[in-house]
Length: 361
Image 1 (cartoon, rainbow, N blue to C red):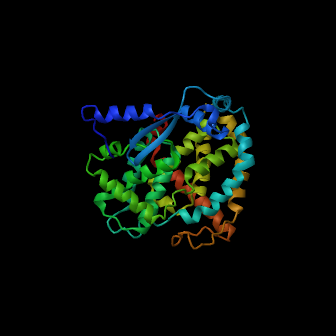
Image 2 (tube, rainbow, N blue to C red):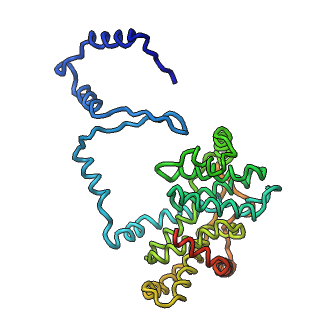
Image 3 (cartoon, helix red, strand yellow):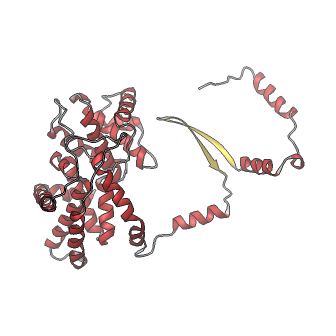
């Protein structure tokens, strides 16, 4: 950045005199387009902020708001009526779901630790289990957490990593995910402080560039959060059931054994297991609501399992070995669903106390 120093007020006074000598054109001599541009410039103020990612310029509007802006703010303040969200999903959710299902094989590495001689599934479990409360500490979304784990796994599938910088990869992936899906990302200094300042800002920025190059700048991946949100709205699940299913999905993020299952399958089975857990508990007011959607859920899962999603690799896509979701045998897919549900039930039974802690966070 270049700064101009004021030497005894000489430069400042000369600059003021030069501005006074220049006569501004009268409004009559300006064209209609120039008058509109002048009025627009008066209503805007240039605000410069120095962020971690570089020099950022933002145009802050004046306090006076236009009628169009008032209408937009009114629409944003209004909450959707009951059933409106489900109507939106019926109109547009199916298209987005199929697009994400077709992209699933390209962005889901089943064997991310196959090329990591210094990393183990236990080390990955510790890191992801640490990232989950970190993303909640910064009030980031569950989508951001899932995307961070996906970015980390895809990078591990392509690049061998030393064990002493594994934590740096986790926070860098979280930073990239927050830049992709959040409005505001955490400051680098805050992320490094959670690592006890073992790493420097330069190391994190260099690793950030390396991850982007390895992933070919393809950060938007289908995640557990997207499919869970879609399924929840399709069956109109209760908030309690949705929260419990999200907690179950958080457990699967840390368990490397669940990497072999597609995110769409894991999310559907997690929601099914969550509904069964709530039904097994007596005295819950949501019990009748969940029971009313049981038949709808079973038919929905059957329809999901009967879908055949194939992947045709293109020149710009990255396809991981052994990650194809094109399964033609329906009986194999049914057995895969049952296997995923059984493993989820086992995982939940081993982490009941953890689920209780998650529900309070």
